[in-house]
Image (cartoon, rainbow, N blue to C red):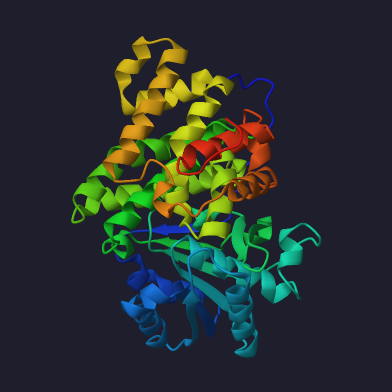
Length: 402
């Protein structure tokens, strides 16, 4: 990492207490809660984890230690505003004192949204669109990720979907940062292969977009590089052999470290394009990012050949023998091969032929209006350029512009 520090100014802030270890939930969760003098807990999770018994397992651990536990396990992918409001009402009705978010990014963001809603009355939409500032402090939150990809357990944002408006909005504030994150690799051991792939690439996107970013700085760069090394080496192993516990642990911690990186910088154009995909077509966030990644990086290369070349070296050290431009171009090839190796589709043609020119126009407009990510991109993308990126991602659509 070659940077000039003498004239730089930046700040870092890591308030989340990170507890990592195999079976750390069984050994430390209830003790941590009791040390906070908490008696009543709201556990926020999703239907899938409820069906396979994970929600009940965590609830029983808490109840056995005398805690009063309310459960909201109705969160769906891309958590809806309605679900967050319902969980908030449950928290208030039961006089809870703590929120536990159990699951992937959707459950984690829902839990963080509940914390915002407890203190900030009314429709959370108002706070997500900047109409009203988020007030704090918020109730304490404990996050237990069950996927290796989100990084949300250590960030200051929660992404919520307004289904009526078909648009995502971001709750962003230092108050939103979780109090504790329990990183237990055993929680990811039963993750299905498609989820391993999509969430793992999502974590890689977080690291790359933090590293090449208008807000990047030396601390975020160091974290992003560290996360990329772990994910690039171990995600293919985790995907190829679901019994490889070490690989799963490496990707999980790599995801958290990537979250620490983009908590300082935000993400960029990959996320700008992916957020409308989940709002309009319900494509899972990680999958959307994974599909979009190679095409956006190819578009972005000219903005910072040096940094993209440095990422390419993580895939193949021999690229150091090439010029920076040549090495950066190799990164696009590597990302295409990497996503293909974990069976990520090349584009969104699998969505079918019902996607229209009007849809692409709407996606373009929403991507340009993604204020939390679009301004961070080092290459400023015009409306036409964003539209053309979507055209590449939807080869089945007859385009007016080429």
